[in-house]
Amino acid sequence: MKRIYPSGAEKRKKKKDDDEKRQVQGAQDAAAARIQDLEAEVRKLESEVMQLRIGHSLSQFQRFCASDEDIRFYTRFPSEEVFQAFWKSIEPSASMLVYWSRAQKKGQATAVEASHSHHRSLPLIDEFFLYSCRVAAGLKEKVLADIFKVSVSTVSRIIITWANYLYLVLGSLPIWMSREQVNATMPDKFRQFCPEVRVIIDCTEIRCQNPSSLTLQSEVFSSYKNTTTCKGLIGIAPCGAVTFVSSLYTGSISDQELTKQSGFLDLLEPGDACMADKGFTIEKMLAERGAKLIIPPFKTAAQFSKENAERTQAIARLRILVERAIRRVKEFHIWDTTVPLTLSGTVNQLWTNCCLMSNFQWPLDVKGHKGVCPS
Image 1 (cartoon, one colour):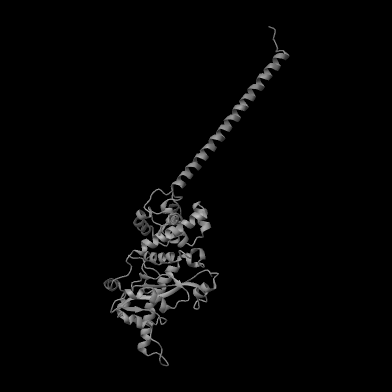
Image 2 (cartoon, one colour; image 1 turned 90 degrees about the horizontal axis):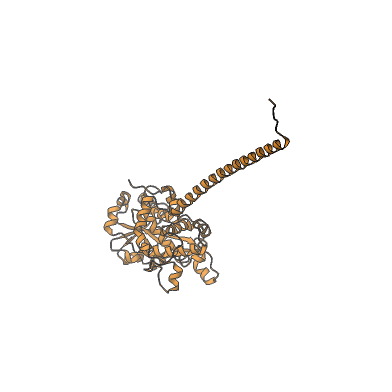
């Protein structure tokens, strides 16, 4: 039988068909690989979108305060439990706030207004957290603007608003302790040496920016600190709680005049005793109220008698408690640097808030310098 071989035309056609099949197969393989790449890209983008949604649903407070240690750093509250208790107590009234600038435009005296219509750039708890970051952690306004993704002017308005709001809220708390409350919470060391003490006082100063006015410069200049300062009086009960905070005065005022102008003397009752250091020569002012001053005895001889030495040591050990309380207030890091003139209208509120919010920390230990965690 005769064998038939394909012609040259048929060979070329077959080769062409095979080439086309290979091209189609190659295109299909490339398309399949591209589809796999696109599907992987889609899964990646979906994951990123999900993460963004999760991140967006969390407040900045939740993102930054995942532990008690974080809360202590950013807010100075000792734990999440204490923070949440404080937040729940102020949230209802805080929801009525408007920004300070808007309150000014309306001619209002405060930053509080019964209106829910004001649009806010941040959730309410994040506004309070932003204020805490500025005051407790000492973060600058530009840093806060970047973290919270708002403008610097918005950060400034939030800080001023919350400073005034907390000043009103905390200022309404009855922090002055009655004689019975002082006696009930008095540590044994005080009962042993100074059972009649109702309050321990001391003055402290914070640095402020030097004003351009020569008259103001002379008023705020402190000869004790050798710089321009604001000066205030703080009083604490023997248990360590802050029970009196004066307004801030110019640094040139004396301790005696500040005590007189602050209204502190009006709180004392006959039989009370006030503990202070030797710089407070206010015996006459206290005597007019029926109270007395407890200070370390002055040295009148070549050396102290044994009795005076023991009394001096005892008073010094107990009086230092107020210095620890003041240090706790100054651990709010907004006071680490000089107070700028831009905060001059709010510095008194900020200072008072820090003093009063220090009461939400652990009680001070009479024997040591650290707070004591209650059991």
